[in-house]
Image 1 (cartoon, rainbow, N blue to C red):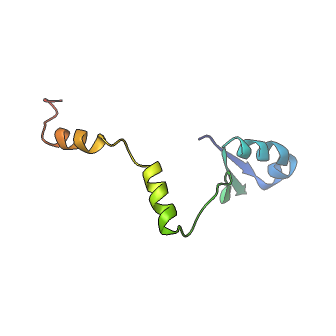
Image 2: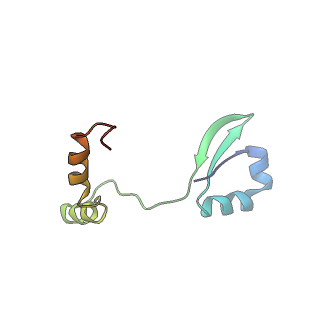
Length: 83
């Protein structure tokens, strides 16, 4: 993800460009006299609470490769020279 800094005066003059950058995934730090005061980030759907069924579904969907635990267990028993 890219990152840009923009002052309030520059934001006023380049609002559409900043919004387009954020839409494309860029994070923008808003500054006042060079000091960061806020971050403008792409909007994402956020949940504060997930029902149990939804949480289980999301955990399954986002789970790592099922073979990862086996690979990690095997790697723990090895030294760097063995790898």
